Length: 104
Image (cartoon, rainbow, N blue to C red; front, side):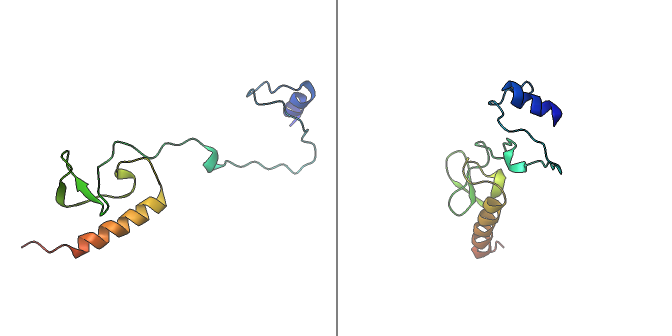
């Protein structure tokens, strides 16, 4: 806290080059936490498997590969990501896979 407070006095953040700090930190207790949402993390890919609206995997010609489904972060595209994408696409894939005729 003492080092940070010197940055307030000089008007310059010597450690990280952030905009001039304005307020001293003086009154304990002090707490710190890592904000996972603030960390830059790339967990999607544009190069995943190509799928259609039924989450069926498509080949290089855009033809459906029978019986092959994909969802979540293995599917290509850079849009929605994370658990919500996996749940939604898993539901869609499961619903369509269950509706397929069983092969003999």
